[in-house]
Length: 273
Image 1 (cartoon, rainbow, N blue to C red):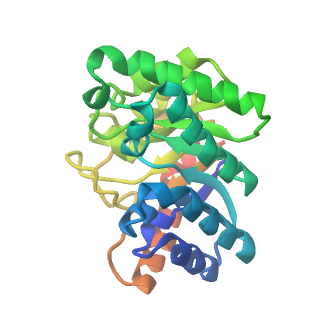
Image 2: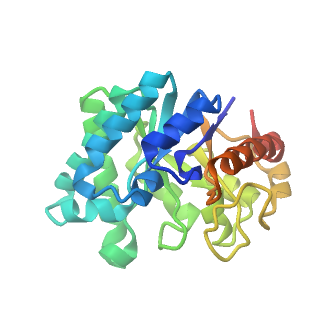
Image 3: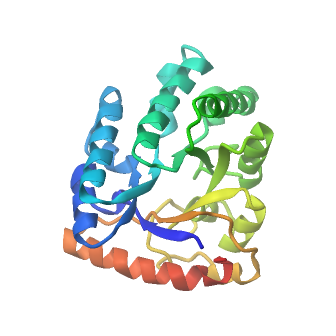
């Protein structure tokens, strides 16, 4: 059965402090999310070392981190300017660090058409993820990459396109991270999004909105039609990550997280194996 994980992005704290707070609240499995690093103004060159420190803190506290949400596409663009292989090497570094601390899934956003041009977005992403899969297999890393459908950037705001990219790579190392919130602002109900993913999802990002902006609300607090899951197939995702945000105090945010976890179980009950 898929496990529901809290994310460090919920807490308005640096990622190490966020791990400490989640551990003190009794959570033994969490997702480490790049949003926590970004909010703490961690610069790009320092990210690999920060990631090590955060995962080391989780290990010290006995907290498992099966999922890491890697940096947004902007992080990789300077490397991509030196060639696809350079960008792959940086992604592989983050994967190696993550794998060393027991991470099973590294979530990455694909490069958008706005950044690469409509004519190059598909083939560059195919090449990037195909080479990354080959390198993961060559180094015998058990970690998998989950390609996430994006909020606004075409073509990857289209779930069919994102699924097609994963299928084109055709590697067991590459799956899909289905983001229900991103799907919602692109006209998908949760049920339609899950059908469109066609079982390629290995993780799910769970949050809500009102169909216009990427609000990262707790599930059930927006206008997404969660009842649409009643006619959707069972998910094949291993992990479901609660990706809601909170700007209040720590106690309020942890209470909000507990409430979101209860809501998640109820709303997703029709599609949980």
